[in-house]
Length: 131
Image (cartoon, rainbow, N blue to C red):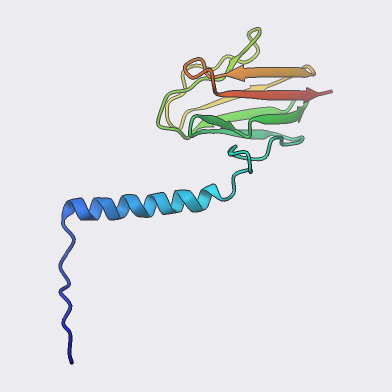
């Protein structure tokens, strides 16, 4: 017995749903690299210039260790505007970071610097500068 299968072009809403489903699948696979506690990356990165990505309303990695004189760069890969704002002092004080904006700081003194996003204070991170 011969079966025929109709091959219609998907309508625009069906196509959009298919594209979104594919994007979610890719995002789920990418999520497999997250740490067990749901963070974006390992808890700490040791030494050298460091990159922190702002995505899914979190800083990743959340905790970074660098040496005196190293540069840390934050990149906002999120759709919302965020900041890097020190909990104490003026050491970390970015402007409002829109999607794809970056903020860099070079820390010249040892210490521990805690920071948040001023718009989303549940977003927190720590930079440990070792001398």
